[in-house]
Structures are given as C-alpha cells and as structure tokens.
Length: 196
Image (cartoon, rainbow, N blue to C red; front, side, top):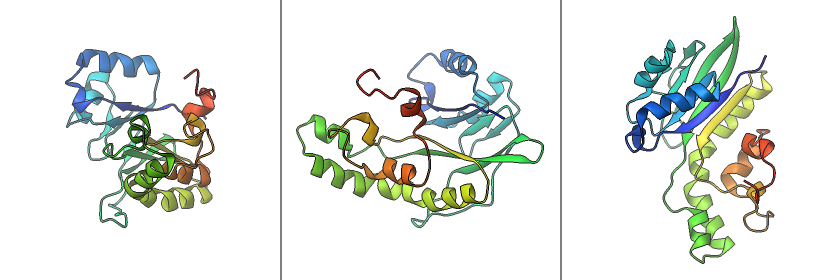
C-alpha cells in the first residue's frame, strides 16, 4: 500500500500568504497525511476546510485516515515527542513524527556568512542534534518491530547530499536519521543538489 505524506510549513500559520492557497496546495499534492509546520492554531481549521475528518492539533497532523495520539512520551529534554499513529488500512498503522527543528543559529547561514565548516558543524551539533536525537531511538525501535514510519519535518538542517561542504560532511541531525535507516525523500526524488 502506498500513502503520501506531506510536510508543509505554513509560515506563521498561513497569515503571511493567501490562506486559500494553502488549502489548494494541499489538495493539489494528493497527500493522505499532512504534517503542518508553524500551524499557529490552524490545524483543525485546515482539516475542516479540506473536508478531512481527522486532525490532531497537539501533534500538528491532519489526515484522510484515522489518527491516534499515543500516550504522552517525553524526550530526554523533558519535551513531548510529536508522534502520531495513522491507521492506513484496517489494523495497519504507520508512525508519523511531525517536527520543526530550531531555526536559530543556522549552520547554512553561518557558511553563507563566511564561517567555516567546523564552525557550522559545531553549531549543528549544539542546536539541531539535541532536537532530533529523542526521535532516533524510538523510531528505530518501531521500524525494527515492523511499524513503518515517517519523520516529516522542517529540518533547518544541512544534509550531506545537499552538496554543502563538498558533500563529504556528515551533518549531525540528518546523518542520525540516515544512519537509523531513514531515507531523505527529497534527495531520493531530486538527487542533484545543483539542479534542486
């Protein structure tokens, strides 16, 4: 069975753009499950405008299929993990994590401003790695147990396949997910970083 998961940054709740276009974009995507970044309280509203019956505002996830929020799980930093389960077929579930990694102190911005790869790596280890780390072990355990999953996120993170740092740098947040067996779906679809 194939399902389509979309991660969509609304940019401060969609107030910075024509909100009707947000709905049109989701409809045009053909997504079954949408993980909303920066929904600013609009999760249930967007589901209603799409005519979708399922929304988990606390997880920022909407879907055409039933959604369930597991009991609250806390990461080592004490923050709630944004994980949901989607029932994609009777008794068949996938795990969905909807994450927005911190945008401040960006390694890519540091590089654009003349910083070194070492400085950018240190920043990524300090800022983005702690935000993704709580998800790696649970996601890996679920996958090993046979529960497929997707981590949909606004990463604000560099990735080796983006060609930054000559394509040889293992940027911590993305590399942790790749090492855990996840696929960078964007780079799988668009492998040439110079083209996209």
